[in-house]
Image 1 (tube, rainbow, N blue to C red):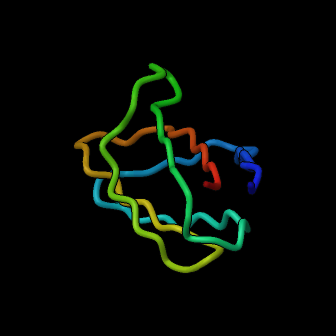
Image 2 (spheres, rainbow, N blue to C red):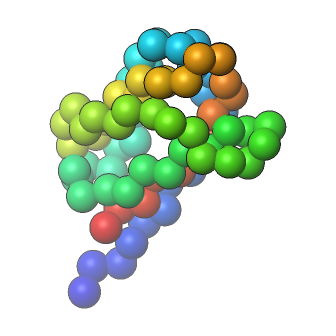
Length: 76
């Protein structure tokens, strides 16, 4: 059985409405779970997540206000 690796980014990201940002996670797999939360409130945010390749994802903010966002990526 493969053990899960938790990957936490060392920084928060800032996204404006409609902006897309690429996040490189370096896990070498598309079998991941991505959790995103608003840093100041600790609640989930409405973001479009797209897996680009084995090492990166893109995030597009859907809300109407800019946000500081925390990102957690878990390999399955």
